Image: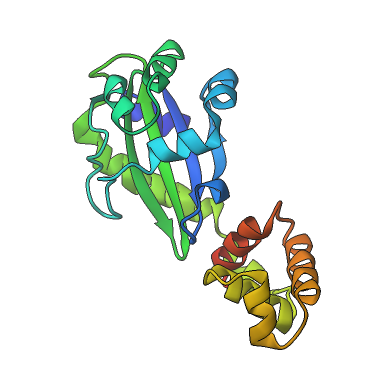
Length: 210
């Protein structure tokens, strides 16, 4: 990623793993050379909002949403003051693009410490190289999907919750108690090494279990 960033004139990079569910809290940082204090102060939710802003380049398309976008314009997307924080950490210009490897979707964000530092002509090639790197990082996901640790009931409960059903609604659908549903979801969350049910759903979807 460092070589890829330098190829386009960027000074820093951020690589995010995007969930199949539309939940910012399920987004995960895979690789990053942003200053640690910047990640800590901004937080993953703000970073995700910046990276997932409307207009992001589709797979195979040229990155266009942050083409030489001064960070001052970010105050339209996130809370006022964020752009000042980014600039103070040397993140003065951003560009980003989605990358794919099968069902696994990622997003790379490249930044420059000066406005106009990123070479626009090299961005499409950088997106292609990023997708190749992403495929290498996700080479083991298909194998992981074959070893599904979930029981049929655990998978069923996660599937209904992913559709927006409450615990009580799932209990009625399956003809069991709410406590039983919570127990199934808890077991599934533990098996998938997830922090909460939202993350468990994201992991299950990414690995082809739902």
